[in-house]
Amino acid sequence: MSQSAFSYADGILHVEGVSAVSLAEQFGTPLYVYSRGALTEAYHAYADACDGRRATIHVAVKANSNLAVLNVFARLGAGFDIVSSGELARILAAGGKAENTVFSGVGKTSAEMREALDAGVKCFNVESIPELHALNEVAKAAGKRAPVSLRVNPDVDAKTHPYISTGLKSNKFGVAFDDARATYAQAAAMSNLEVVGIDCHIGSQITEISPYLDAVDRLLDLVEQIETDGATIRHVDVGGGLGITYDDETPPDIGEFVRAVLGHIEKRGHAHREVYFEPGRSLVGNAGVLLTRVEYLKPGEEKNFAIVDAAMNDLARPAMYEAFHRIVPVVKSDAKAQTYDVVGPVCESGDWLGRDRELAVEPGDLLGICSAGAYGFVMSSNYNTRPRAAEVMVDRERARLVREREEVRQLFAGESILPD
Ligand code: LLP
Image (cartoon, rainbow, N blue to C red; front, side):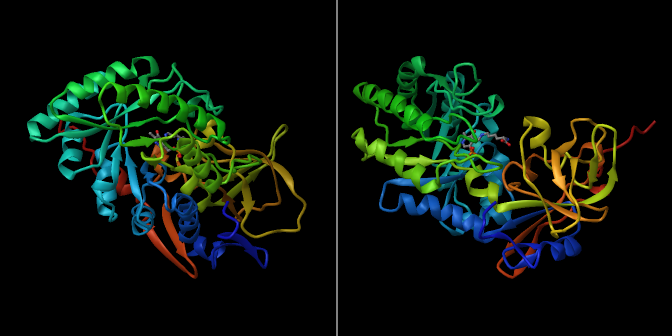
């Protein structure tokens, strides 16, 4: 977690200047809490390293789409990377601009394309030939030319979890490297498309720089070929994916990563092209914590369980990817620690948040599940008819509710029973 934003004062976890105990009392648990300072700091790390270069940051909305979070980035001048018209609506509602937005995703519908075209997005990151045809038709009907980039699959090993590795031949994403040149030629021949760039995304939670440099090399090789065919590639979009520290990972710092990528592109003689970054996790992951309260302690023969009020529906990452999130006491205790599996109340054995954790806890105690700002709330569900958590943003001494806790009646408000 961002060390400046999350720290202990008098043995109590604070988010900036606000005690996590008071946050839990005021807003209830489970509760997502974000630090505006940590979001700002992470954004600046990207922006400062891009300063004076032709480079732009597009926040990957999927990692955290709360309007207040998006608005913090919009105020800082960020662009956005969206994957649905729902995310487009969110960035517009949050003060973001369509003209600073790229539209990614492997399955955009024609309706979504039309909305994005009408809104004036900067670029469609297209992933297949059928999608090129569909976009061309949509643009023709709208009397416009759609700006396109092809997501090329550079087939590099991002050395990350298979579920979040996306740049291999075996993944569903992108245009195969070997087909890319011919696909660009097809795009260039379509009347209502304008080729403007090239993009890739090789995976997420990547903790080394070298896979990026490999991917950049592959893209630039291709750009050189495509330009001999007559197209103009104005920008190179290197995707998102820089990892964060959940446990003992040691990713490069953001500035080092950005400078390495930009330096590499320059060294290859492509400094005239604009470079796009699409970071998600590294902007928001360590800017958020999920607060939860211990309901019961259940000692067992093989395991002790700490049953808490957050569950897999609130934070899916452990259940989905066996992801590790540090779990810390909100109030430090001198009592003897025991080993617990921290689990939720959902009726699934997969409903765990942390395994084999040394904790000194009693029922009623609060815990903080760290690094929960990315792919946390956005992946939450209503499984077991559990209302989704509230979200709060802390800005120095002030905490603001930025999403109300759902109420049970909202969960089935759109449902109906048969008349007879
Ligand atoms: N751009 C594209 C096209 C993407 O598909 C993604 C993430 C990003 C940018 C942002 O990547 P980031 O900087 O956040 O790594 N739910 C998984 C992560 C899935 C990532 C999918 N794509 C998790 O919780 O680990």
